[in-house]
Every structure is written in C-alpha cells, then in structure tokens.
Length: 148
Image 1: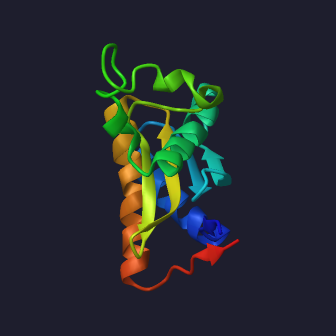
Image 2 (image 1 turned 90 degrees about the vertical axis):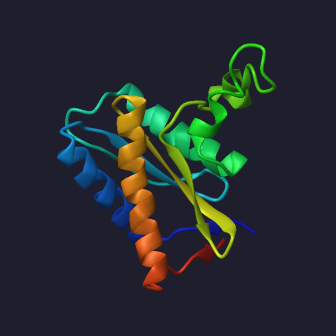
C-alpha cells in the first residue's frame, strides 16, 4: 500500500517553503512526493533555475526511497566510503546533498519534500520550513494521509 499526502496538504507545505525562500530572497523549486517518491505537487518560483525542477523532484524521491534526509548521504557517498557512486544509481535519480527530507506520520514515511535553487544550506532551510509546516499540521490533527 502506498502512503500519500493529499494535494491540498502538499500545497500547504509548498506555500510554507516558498515563504521561507522569499524571506531569504532566493527563488526555489519545491516538490512534494508520496511514500514511493512519486510527485504529488511541484512549484517553480519565478526566477528559479530550470535545473532545479529535476533536482528538487529527485531530492524528494531520494528521501522517500531511502527514508532519510539527503544530507545524511553526503559523507557516505564520498570516494572510498560505503555508498560511493550512489548518485549514479537508480537512473541518476539519487541526490546525495541536502534539501530533501522524508515526511513521517505515526512512525511511517508517508511522503517527502525536495527543494533546489540555492546553496545547500538555503535548500535545507527552505525544505525545513515545509517539514515544520508538516509537523504543525500533524500536531493540529489536520492531516489525513491517503492509502492508495
């Protein structure tokens, strides 16, 4: 069974992330995916890099597929380490730098958010704004995860 976040919720996460991108004055592309890493929604802010469209989707995919933030893969994927070459696997969809985070509910990965368009620290900050909104919605019991 595939866990999925409703489109309305994905849109709220994107809006929260976009507000953070506006605060730091850096246009971004923000993607939200289901538990299998398949796209639910994506938004490219005016002026965001074209390359960030695929990178943001792939960050969300990587986080969902591996159940972890993409920045946790950076060191392990360096030359000589256990996951070296990971970024060349899975048809090049694996991203091994920050900006992708899994979204959890009741201890299960139900989706992921991926952000691209700035320095890694900026991508992470914008994605974390989306994660914070997710956690806020969970606390308010305002999320209804679908089982597709």
